[in-house]
Amino acid sequence: MNISLFLQMAADAEPDRVALVCGGRRWTYGALWQAAQGAAANITQSGCKFVALLDESSEATPIALFGAALAGVPYVPLNYRLADEDLAALLNRIAPACAIGDVERIKRLSPTGNHACFNRADFVAAAEAVGEPFEEQEESEGIAAQIFTSGTTSAPKAALLKHANLLSYILGTVEFASASPDEASLVCVPPYHIAGIAAMLSSIYSMRKILLLPAFSPESWLSLASEERATNAFVVPTMLSRIIGHLDEGAKADLSSLQAIAYGGGPMPMVVVERAMHLFPKCGFTNAYGLTETSSTIALLGPDDHRTAFASTDPAIRARLGSVGRPLPTIELEIRDEEGKCLPAGERGEIYVRGEQVSGEYRERKALDSDGWFPTRDAGWLDEEGFLFLAGRADDVIVRGGENISPGEIEDVLLTHPSIADAAAVAVPSNEWGEAVGIAVALKPGCAAPSENELRGLIKDRLRSSRVPERIAVLNALPYNEMGKLLRREIRKLFSN
Amino acid sequence: MKPGTKLKSAVCDTEVMVIKGSNIVVDCGGKPMSDAAPEARGDLDAAFAEGTKMGKRYVNADSTVELLCVKAGKGSLSIGGAALQIKDSKPLPSSD
Image (tube, rainbow over the protein chains, first blue to last red):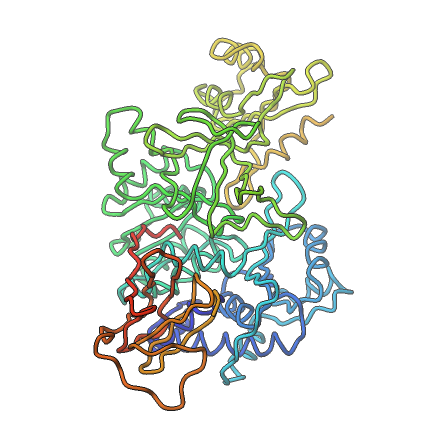
């Protein structure tokens, strides 16, 4: 099994159809397939154990992804936003790699790695120059991609996605060649994110043209969407909120072609979804929840669910706009307590998943239990009809004197304060309790900071005294990574002394 | 054969990849498929001539065998004389 099959099938079916638009250049399925085969030959010749990409999205992304797959070498997209020290550690973990992108940085950070380095243009030109069919290689360990987790809670782990995992995900969710020739998907997530890989695979298998945006800005997103008549798009919450902000400020763009917007990667504020549904009434919205370790999406809230929830006056149904929908029919999902017992609807616990698309395997260790279940470390609960609501990370629970406190309940109360724009509750060390509550808040523009007593009083009145924060920090903004994930470890650092 | 093996028809252009199932003889157009294309093509059995569709998954009655059609052809797929069926799939809204 090999994911290169997706591109090969598309190229067999319609070699001259446009597959990719990037930087003003157009690539057909046939041209991409030929370049991927050339890349595979060059990768094989380099003798490297990994194919690393340290670059923004470009035509080199699918060529490296499928070329690595054909050559039977794991593809490792790296986060170019990482600090030098962190990136150096990752480069050394995959030496020697056929490394594509920022050659100067790769050589400087991993001088003894013996990497075969190519800048983007050279890699693509060399792949195109081969011009011969490549005989698919037996994949070593069957690994298609190795993705370093973002490490919001600990050092990055090397998540391993097998060809069989990704194949199962795509075959289970996408119908081959189901897209009409005028369908085009705007892809703006970075290549090192699982959503970036999933976007390549599902677009190519459905034969939906990819409009690749190398670096996101609301301006460039709107202009590419209108110029190339995008019909589909995937965005993370911060991107959608910046796009909406730009439109609200009067930016003009013809988005009449847009039929579907999918979002995921972090919690989406309800106000942003509602505003987006108002702005794009003809658009179908899909909220996707997934992890790197699960080959992307495992639950989704589809367009019909969005409309039903949006139109409902029943609070329980309306609330589903804030859910991640139902689990995919191809996977199993359970909520479990700390002892591993399965919990009924309405009770919060840790989300476990099982299925062929679930890898749950790291280079360092296998995280699946003996029955094949993967503990996601995400906390959540299911409602009566099986809609999944996320409730932070299981690790984020604050344990104060043996009592488990969910950060979300404190954050929800803080957000009711008229001056507070954003809030996070974390565990802080406490001699008396082991852990206690620390809160960080960011204020709305022009608002004065409420006193510490006022905030403590607010929590005490609405919740129990155990939830009252011991430490309080007022920040200009809470720290997020570029995918919109709150960096709780950074907040914990504030309180570490 | 095993998961990942590609099987070619002995009578038409059909090519499938094995998703599930091992060591089973799959017929296309009434003749056994194999991992190498035959030097000369045999005749299509009229009882197995409905054709295969690219991108469709084919399963046997108890779902122990699943094949993905990667090249379409005129023959249809069977195991031990029992025709394979197209696997029902519920299309999901695109989430990426």
